[in-house]
Length: 218
Image (tube, rainbow, N blue to C red; front, side):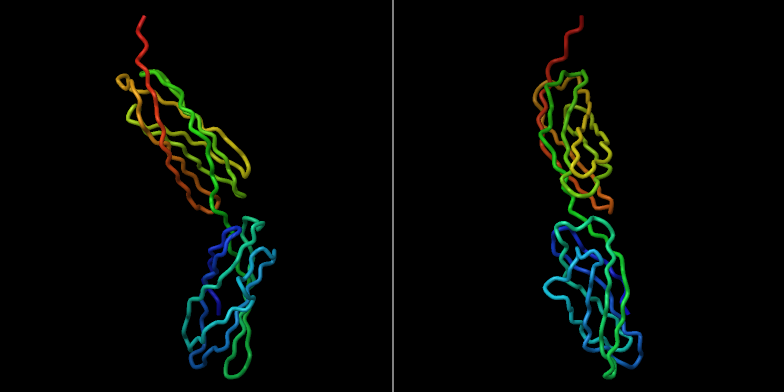
């Protein structure tokens, strides 16, 4: 009776459970439907009430239902097992249908960064950028990439890798300013990553790069 169960469930927020309710009979309507959803861990709750009224489902019909849900702030970021029970009436007889489904609980990516450290560089000589990155979320962040773009040098990037919850890592990136690029140049640093569920995050920050004259040859 219930199928195609998916969730929009983030830690500490209100979300929803999307599902399809089908009436497999060819002649009888399902009326007075009441849906209840329970989480084995108690960390995912129905919003407002533990009884969700379901519209009448005609014979052979399938309807889409969105159930408001609330995820507690201390909920574990993992796949949760939700038990769905549908009670309904057919021809005056009370019927029920029950099954468990697994739905992931995620958290919005919380990747924070400090100030980009860009010491003065010398045209034609190796320079460097340092950027502290902090994972303030409860899940691991993966494939963290930092990329520097500036008119004074070729595009450079570094793959930081993964950062565990509560961990800080330094992104270290090297570049060589063009030989004729002395002066002050604007640029951007792009930071991107993803979590264990494939959710992605990207941020761009403005930076300024001071490039000095090439050192005289001896």
